[in-house]
Image (cartoon, rainbow, N blue to C red; front, top):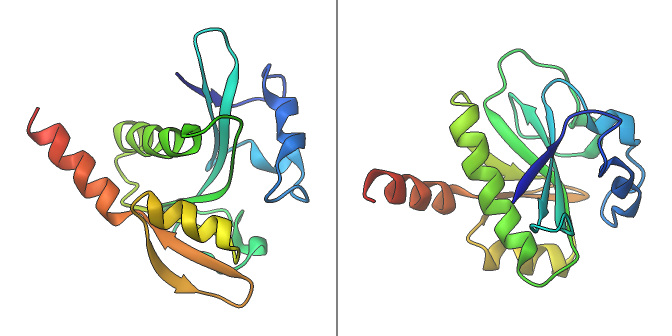
Length: 157
């Protein structure tokens, strides 16, 4: 089940302290306009995975560009994801993309701002992303095929 953290008082908010990818980003900077935090949980409220998303009008190349305010966001930037159960990260990415597409029709691209690690590379490529761009300290992966696959599934039940 997908859960969105939208406030500082959300029952899952404190789990942001466990972010292994971007622990330096303050919790309060992750909540607000043009930002979402998705939690994948089971029916007993046990958290299986978490991802944070920033909505932008361009694809950032570094962390400092993640939270630029824009009124014309067309890109969902996944900048951290961590999992507590095998396969939960994949499920969360796909569910979050579906949720964003259903609720934010102006979002047309789905990319990451990922660290340059073998773990991130394996995760994103295994889940259907392509390398969009390599930056000095990060990599942008794009989930083009996942979005197209989901569109086909929606068009042809």
